[in-house]
Image (cartoon, rainbow, N blue to C red; front, side):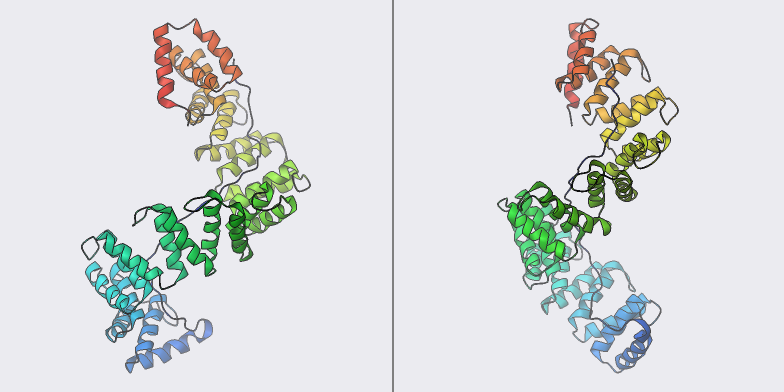
Length: 444
């Protein structure tokens, strides 16, 4: 007996993500942009030629960024070098970046360290931080983790919020430092207190999960709100989740929908997917399949596997759009290719039955296996049937027993009945082998 076919239907989804980003980049004072760029460039070039150190710095950065002139990294490095030789710490930092990346000069990590150190000795936090990276990776200097950490802290303690946030991320991920969630939370807090929106958003996640701090939903909601009110899509989405679930705030569906919508219109895919689910199920909003499909599609176009699967379901069920199983199969295929187990199962049933696709038992078995290996019970049950009947795979009672046993262990009634049929077909030794195979996979 095959497990009844099942379509992946839209469901409420919540996902909190953290991303780490560290970079070595040019940095310096702001200067004119737009129509005045050429005028500014010419003025700086004249002053730089008269040995004005600030003009040399700005001219170097204008060449580096192609502002007021054609981008020219060699000219940029030349003028940065002149300013650096006069002791300008910003020029020294940027010259270090030039040597690190080989921008306008030959790549030279030793020379990069030299200029970072000169700038760091003058208290330039970016140079101190990058010098730490050089020590940690042993680039241009002997590798020295303790010196690296000292440099990181020296930079962050000066107060630049972005460096404090980066140091928090490094501690959270164990990147270039020993992993320490308490230290991570400390540095996130310092950056968040300065108003850095991404630090506020991540700090909300830290309090929500209780990582490095005591779990505190009210504090999580407070930080999500700070980020959300600054227009951060992730903060808006997570604040919506808190209102949706009544965690740290009083449950309020209207507030949840409002924050989801703010995040969705900014292009935040998780919010778009969640909003699609609300409209599909009529929860907190008037049920509207066309609007649901619009939001699912927005998230799907950004690569959300769950949204792609939901778009497939809408086409398969004819919700918000005329029923079209070929179009449904296309979207299930996109999600399945990203590893969505439910989409893999549904795609397998479509190949098995020839719905929206040319009937193909081999591909059906392939997709059942992919879903089954991820612990999808229905796929395990159906893959067992495929092996039992020799459809799309070579008939194999041991493999049939293996997959059916896995599904039955999860209290699946269909699998339990199939297992009863298989009991009489195998010897005790064969059943033991099948159970061993099942045990090596487990249910992931």
